[in-house]
Length: 122
Image 1 (cartoon, rainbow, N blue to C red):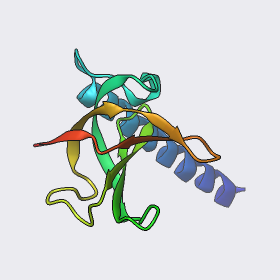
Image 2: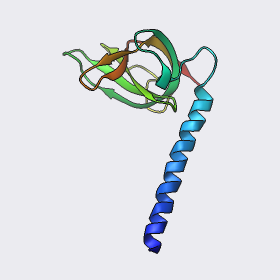
Image 3: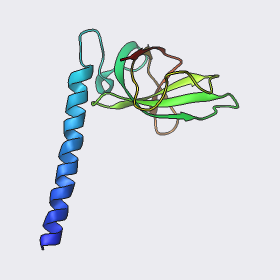
């Protein structure tokens, strides 16, 4: 029984730290004039600020495409730069501001912004 309760405490502590991280990110990235990813409307111009969790090279239709997942504590959106293999400064962990329109793509209706305007944040 002691082993199970220790495991439960460990899982609970991990879950609470993940929740705390999301709350901290929401506080950091919430400011007037910015949309939060979870509430950002599709097909309208949005301004989002978050951290890139992943960056991968994933060709689309034979064209190189740099793809990243932007997370702000409320949700995530995929950012795609078509025709690019790399962009200086676009790496996992970087904070950035992006502007563009969110579209839906594929069977799973993944939310994507293609070729956004962006600014790297300190």
